[in-house]
Image (cartoon, rainbow, N blue to C red; front, side, top):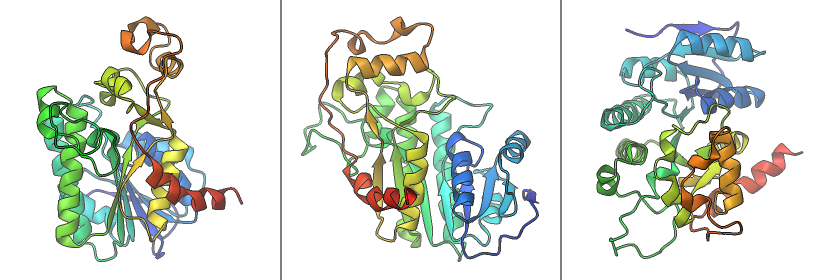
Length: 312
């Protein structure tokens, strides 16, 4: 069934109309606020009435906002939310009744990515898609695989699907397969797409159960445990959308967890009452520092002018 669209006293006929999906999550909600501040008309695609009520409470100027109830597995609901939009900011959050990642969630996320890119291809007004992926879609490689030419990681890397399956790294598997599906469809259908491969988002609702954190000790030892602040992540999304020279994938993080001090600070966020449950490798040695082996130079270079503009 097609979703109901809720108008907030305004029209979305502007050529600067964009869609944010999933607008109910931490990233999506912050994107909606920031885009409205920058003068965009926004189609906020959400999954529940609870999310709409939250949006009504937090957004003051609703004249440029329309809210759509969408299901990423329902192609027609996506098409309706995209109507008249020149861009899409897409992220996938597990349904509230299925918060954990497993093989079923992987299948769901891949299907959702396929539906969304297909809908974009069928929407004539869409000029660009910003697809939110994860750093876990590129950091997991089989240590016995000698085919990699570099020990370090950047946007050219992809996580090894078989390695993820073997060690049940479902978050990495889901993000890898969903992003590859999106890129394949984008290239086949001629959709202009850029992906943001985000580090662990330090959002207020972050807990130790977040699926990104499976394998955290290994990420830490390898110098590839990265996090990102919400503001930087939001600005990065808008930057790659507005910047015509943006292309391909962008590793997006602004902090590396590579010292015991960093690990303890993160532990206090995740486990405020029991930091002792951290892996020993993240706590031994007061002055231990792990060499960083992951690069965010590409996004930092693109963000220079954008951040300068924001501070004018």
